[in-house]
Length: 171
Length: 344
Image (cartoon, rainbow over all chains, first blue to last red; front, side, top):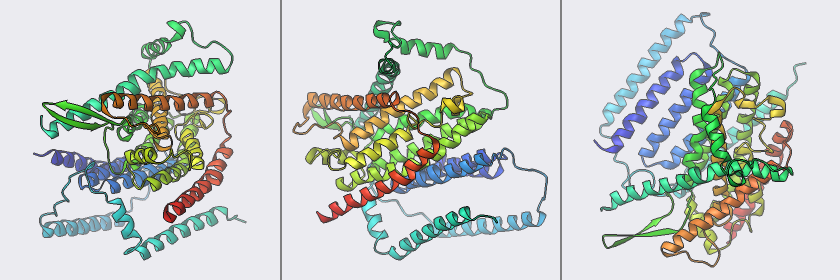
């Protein structure tokens, strides 16, 4: 058994376990933390795929910035325990289960049909990987320029919208 | 010895060397330097009873912290409460991995000479790795504040999260300019560029100032230690911590200072290099480590000096400085540097 397989097993196991914990755990702060752990495990998987840049972005943007803001909001509202017992939402639960089974079956089918995964580029994991950053940069500003610019406009709109909403007086 | 085994042995040796210098040799003396420096600046002796010049004060402090009763208040979130001090320590310990601390060290084994670069892991994402772990370190403080089940701790944790988010951006943009001129995210490449041209602090003085201020905010040091703010929040996020766990927050803070100083030196002051001197051979390698060490010490001294000189910012001032001054300035700085790089 190669070392990479061991790391993969640990990281993917951690990702699945913490993703489950995120949903199951009752305390919102612990939920957020489980999500942090999930993103961290996913970053480790990216490193295994010889994509350390993606891994770093995953940790910086998701685990380091967005989830800190989540935590900030949870703490600011001082949510200690999820309110229990009220509104069991029976229909939504059944619909949710159906959706889960459908999407899960779809994913499983696609994975099984795809066959053996492509071999990652030679050079192996972090440290000796090819420099992917210039390639990524070039792609962003050539092939994906429109999508890239559209996304940045979208983010700007969201920021301006949030500002307007927060500044609006309720009179 | 095959290349692979040699690489592993060399990596372990380098990790041990860096941790020995940074944690075993530097960290305890930093506590002493801080307290004596405080004494000097405030015109009083400071701790001078334990050993010559009070040098063993740190040992006495550590023994005291170990011996004290470890009080865990009721109604805390035990898991997170116990985990938080460890999370604070972690980023500082792993940050050292990508900072080059010397030139190359020639090792002759069985007639084969290999040049060992004095950096633990030369990863191609260099600085992003540091930012990734720096942004995770904040969880220690935030969780300490939340899990303590104490209003003041909670306020400290809240402040810390907002503060780090605000200053991370300026820090990133300031640092990005140094990588733009070097043309790589690898920290050794930044050092090589500075060796070949000029220390980054000269052409990018504005960037250096932004980075330095942001680093003070990121390490939670005065004038930006709003998360502690003992005048308003008792002791902020670590109000409810005692004994060894409290000591771990302290060690984490100092380890962060060492790592941050090393990073400032690497990005703006040529790292281990000196202009006009080529560090080759065994003695060159040792000399380059000494140079890096000396430069880092200067910035550690600056951290201490600033702490005992400047008063704490008010919270609104902190936010104003971060969002209205540093962030636009760092944007502007990056654009100017990018224009120069493009024009060349």
